[in-house]
Image (cartoon, rainbow, N blue to C red; front, side):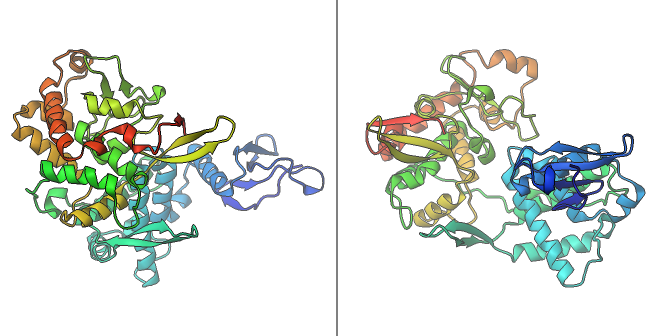
Length: 441
């Protein structure tokens, strides 16, 4: 039986509904995308493969964007909000930095809603209406709109947690994301006009910081992940932060790259038999390198010991249960999307200046290595600031001397940290007992 047009969601010539049989009863729990085919004079359908209506709506949007050709009428009424939504559906959700992209777009959309409620925007709010005054109002609003962490209470309900002031650089990132959304809309011919928006560079809005964490301070951070404080009463609660710190010390990678570290074979990142000590590619197979390059690095002994205890995602938490059949405790490792909340708790407890995020560790370790004599060239390659030619990198990374001084410098730093926080550096001591079998999440 053909579906009736006008189901729970419709966009353009496509609508969402069930495939219905006799009496209008659905033949499947999955939602279908329906449309009228003028060539055959019949309605056609395509399954979304899901019974979740939100996912089904998302799949309809993806289908619409892939096959619909914008008309002049579409272009006249295409709004900024639609541009941001379509950017997320078509591009943003598929990126490794999807969580950050979503947060930036959400911030901009909240401001658009705020402006609309104040009567300062016409409906629909189209790209032609965006100007420098709009961006100026956004900057003022965003700087006074705190970032509030969400957490679950003892009953499992979401409540507001700690709040922090939104940094000027974070505000500019939302403007950059808006520019990207409008550029995609323009390239896809959904809009005729691309407003010449200008964002401020990070250096223009962020004062240059010369302070760094000392070796002692990094050791105290590691030790804190074993002792905890406040709501973090057990080492297990801070395991994701500890794993993040280990990766940051051994790779000096950016936060997004660390959160994207995995030992899964299909990602091609962990190469235990490559080079003299094993190699780790911060950029997984299939991900296109961006200006923030993710290099291939030699693996230190400390990092290897943690990689060997990892099932899939490096930055993860552990959920423990008891297997009655095997009579053993079973640990499941679950990926963690952010360590910001745990970092902020540790930062306050240890007196680290406000405004210093997890990336602070990257700059601190890089400075320590440079001060200890690691050549600037090797530090730059490890940080992704200096890029080797593709043909050169294909060969040089397998040379035993590849970033040899960098690897030695990290080993030297780890030796000092072992004197301050030896327990935190030992991967096996994060488990409650030895009677544990680790299973893939």
